[in-house]
Amino acid sequence: MKPDPLDRLSARLFDAARSEAPPRGAEQRALEAARLESSQRRPANAAPSARRKWLAAGFGVALAAGTALWLRPKEASVGISAEPSSIARARPEPRSAPPVEAPSAAVPALQPMPTPPKPRASGPAAIQPAPVTLTEELSALKVASSALSAGDTRAALAALDHYDRVLKGKKMRAEATLLRIEALSRAGQAEAASALAQRFVEQNPGNPLVDRARSFVHE
Amino acid sequence: MARSRDEVIGNPTKVVPAGTSEPAASGLSINSLVAQHYGFVWRILRGLGLSRTDAEDATQQVFMIAARKLDEIDPNRARSFVYGAALRVANNARRGLRRRREVLDYETSDEPELESRGPEKMAELVQARLLLSQILDKLPENQRRVIVLAEIEQLEVPEIAALEGVPVGTAASRLRIAREKFRALLAGMRDQNPFGDDQ
Image (cartoon, rainbow over all chains, first blue to last red; front, side, top):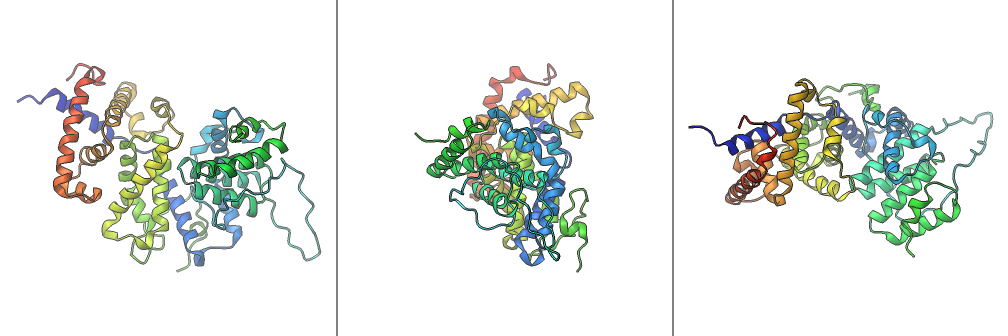
């Protein structure tokens, strides 16, 4: 008996779905992200903070595009965030929030846009910590952006806290603030988001991200 | 046991053989969990309507959740755990604002299977997946899930019932209704048959 054409078509559609393979390297990226998460889960196994910097630096270069993608649809750009998006998936992208303090829902004090780095205290015995690189800053923001895209506002805020408190990020300050505004907004903290957005608008009138920030301000 | 530096810092370029990560008290290791269930989770998320890109992100989220809860996962129910996590992550992802055009997604994708088939077969497969996705989009969520589990994952009804946490009879009935609806929807869209006139 000839098979029913609809059954046959149906079977071929499902075959097509079954034959689909994940993007190249996706499983390895997931494994790396999970391993990172797992290592953060067990502090006893964790190395000191230098390890975090290693991780951030290792992954960082690929992460610029993530931030750029997050910003591009809103017609905002701040120079350094615009790198080719094709880079973004070329390397593992850890999606985890860094092992930092509990995310702060409170609106942090807003810092103006990039300020010159302060000279570090130097003494004969002082060990100069390595300066935080742009890739490290981008890495933290990519983690936040990915978490936000996945609806995990808590992880996004934790990553932004890491950016503020641990990295003391400066180069991507505007993007970080916008991400925090969006994370607060999506976390249901519209008032906090609005207050932060208002301050951003007031303190950075010439910044290209002002229009986006303004959209979060409640009149 | 001392761990290598690459393992400690999670060197992204190093391929980590399965089983090298420290297993949880349950005996599960994140390596084995990813190795055994990555494809399942990824296909479920695709079947639930996430784009290729979003499915990758969401799958990664699932295994990060699993990594956090490794100690709590019953090795005999690991698939149920990742399935449940995948459903929650999918819900969050779909609430986000990341609706993408599937065609663009494919154009920028790197699917070895597709690339090796030549342009015509490739177009056929992409169209087939798009048509399937359009039909699944029209099904109620619980029917969509069971049909994905049955037809794409090819699970038996008792397995579906276990994953869905419903009695076998409920799963069977849901699947029957889902298949009927799927067939009716497909009949209405057969003019979009990507396989041309060979039906």
